[in-house]
Image (spheres, protein in one colour):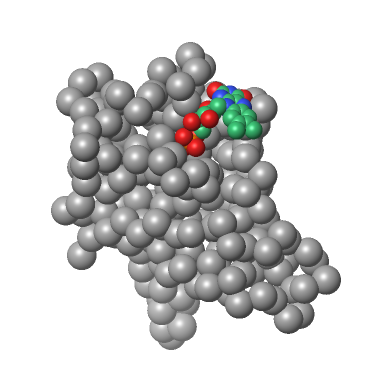
Length: 204
Ligand SMILES: Cc1cc2nc3c(=O)[nH]c(=O)nc-3n(C[C@H](O)[C@H](O)[C@H](O)COP(=O)(O)O)c2cc1C
């Protein structure tokens, strides 16, 4: 079974470069990653007062991310940091306290920009949030995609052949292996502890 991947794009722009990068990743790894774009533009701003009676958009978002085996963030950089709309989505998914939908989910981060440093600042702010959220985030290959423009894509909205597409293909394969590694390790650990518990119950 392919792994279910929730893709969260940090741009609401119709012709977003980052959305097109995300689309390219789905196209490259369609066999083993069942990618689903999770929309975040309609999420009301996070307000702790609403935790007892959450807006239905929050519930929908939490259910969609909660059902995924892994989370892929693909985002621009705004003013050298994480776009507000994405930070809001992360905050919504992280609460109520103790019920974060991100907990333990393997993740990866891609940032793309027409600028030369490829959204490095945004990438690491997302990573910082993921550390706190207890997400094992893939470390390599890093993906700070610089000099991305409309010209980087073909008519279908996917990356044209070239070094950028090669890097994204490498990342898509590595992410599949990362999600697989985390899920297999967890299953093995759970099996080990179930076995140990069974042994403890047996009379000496
Ligand atoms: C409010 C705002 C702030 C921006 N700040 C940065 C920045 O810090 N670094 C950068 O590389 N590009 C910055 N940009 C340019 C974006 O990288 C560019 O608009 C890009 O196309 C946005 O991503 P998208 O195409 O996925 O929407 C900024 C754009 C906006 C609208």
